[in-house]
Image (cartoon, rainbow, N blue to C red; front, side, top):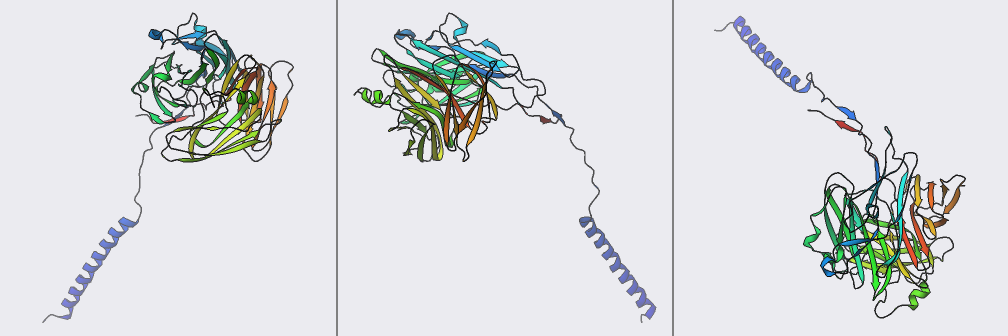
Length: 478
């Protein structure tokens, strides 16, 4: 018989075993609950501030015409020379020619790059602007063409031009960079997207210009919109349009980039003139060609419901509003009828993103012309506006906000006095100016443009804010 002492030893051994197992379990559980000591090495890194690049603007250069000889009809030649004006707040402005894609006797007739050096350590770009203006009067091409000198971009929208009878449209591509650019043109018309093999893989050499006649890609297009996308170097894209009715030239224009697709587009300073003469001059051959219109594209895959409002600037009649339904992937034009002579802020609101620009015409005693007005980007608080020498010039400002604004405009010429411009809420205002450079302050969030006008002559370009400087970046070496 087992004695009590033996039972006690067995009990203690059993209890001891159970206690040991329990301690082991607690130890394992604790290892999963209690934090373990850690050790980590952070990756070495440093902040590098890129060297500020020069601020560049590219001017499109002289107006071009295609040769009448069918064998050389794709080779353009220059017509005269534009007047170019540029200025900067501090740094000196440098001008360098680009190699033109045209027959010309001088590189000064081709596109040019104007640039200023960004001071070391600058956090904002220097105030800098450039623009050009040219008036042509030949047997085949006549008109006033003003254009802002623009920054290079990898993605640009051009809402202008036509390849209908009597219309000539040239896509101007200028590459100021040191590497070649490969360009793809996506073309939309009133019939929808255009499939053109020659629209892809267009090589624009470094430091050179390439001219692409739009008629070779989209013949008989009444209302094209062109998207310009690049790889490699960035380019400045613009579109030259000229119109000849029979043997009579009816105007010329260089249209710059319009705003990227968005649900709202603001087009400042749309100038309507000689409407009585335009209405009386319509004929069976050109009904509607001269009437003011807004050209619209829906680049996406959903149809759009669009409202267009034209609000008169001070001294202009109240304006009008229009509504339209637009098919996805197609271009349409909304007539701006029942408008009186004057300047307007045109606002486009859409249920889906759209691209927009406006066109007006003018009839003088002996000549005719037309203008394209681009959708503009919001301006910054302070900027320079350069007005090249030409006929009557007007600075326009549009205010999409709900509060009135006051903009100060002061010429940089010695003795110039500041001028105040009251810009009403959800409206616009204009200021007549002479040729020169102007410092504009208090314009942040507004849109702006410059228009020129004379008897039978008109043109316009939008004011654009400078692109941001490169920001500091974190570098992680291997």
